[in-house]
Length: 230
Ligand code: TIU
Image (cartoon, rainbow, N blue to C red; front, side, top):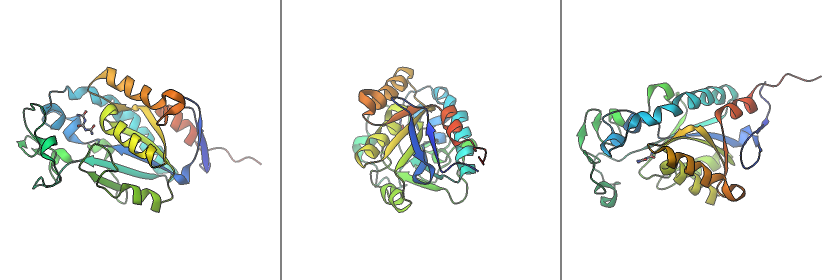
């Protein structure tokens, strides 16, 4: 049996988590960010840089499911009429396709389109919570905080893409709301390797100003079923 709690090796220091008060939060592992022809590529990015996060997330997801941990997936995207997409977001930059334009995986970053969906390897199971968010952070204009409080969650194990954008924004929002955030470094990725590195450093600096940073192997070790002691 999995222990009710486990100590995760992390920086700036190890942290002991009560699994019943911990949720695994997987940020925006959507085709729009991960695959050619989606939002990430229209912004001018090399989407192959994000693939490294998939297997570490898959291993933690499998262990979290086996342990009965609350699993929450998020998706960034907008309503088909773009009523939740501020012009300041849609107009920004010079993408090859803007939010709402038709692309090879359907309309860019629009709910219900193929590109908006989560990649098959990490697809939510029936019963797992999926938060649809219009912003970078998972708390803005969503029911995320209410859901976490309803489930008695105090700690978040956070992974997904991209490290410095939606992962960092969500961790900062969560930190201000009193959640302990433990970010799985190899379960995050960025189009910019230097932003990935600094994005993680910013979280754990100053004694863990926003949270902790760990690795998938350390989470798996902490979740490992413990032999019953006499
Ligand atoms: N562009 C970029 O790095 N990220 C996003 O637009 N959204 C997320 O991080 N999910």
